[in-house]
Image 1: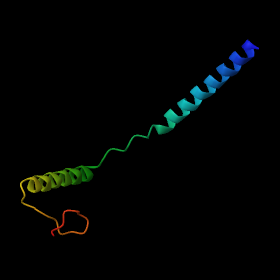
Image 2: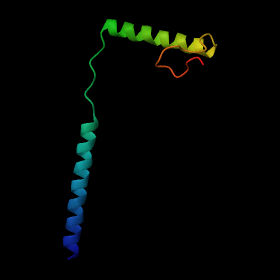
Image 3: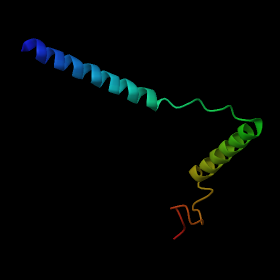
Image 4: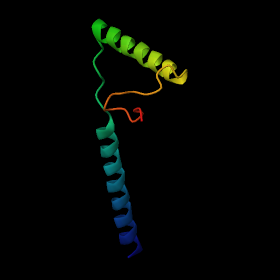
Length: 75
């Protein structure tokens, strides 16, 4: 009887380990293709723009934004 219970527990542990291994393999995303030169330039340009806007907001040069997307609109 004890051997049977031990066998069932062992089988369940093996199945659980295999299930976790499958989940771990599914989570790995395929590698992204390398970016082209124009995409790299665009990302750098946008990053510089974000930094300039953040600096201007910190220095209160842009106290509010009038666009509909921002929550800091003028009152």
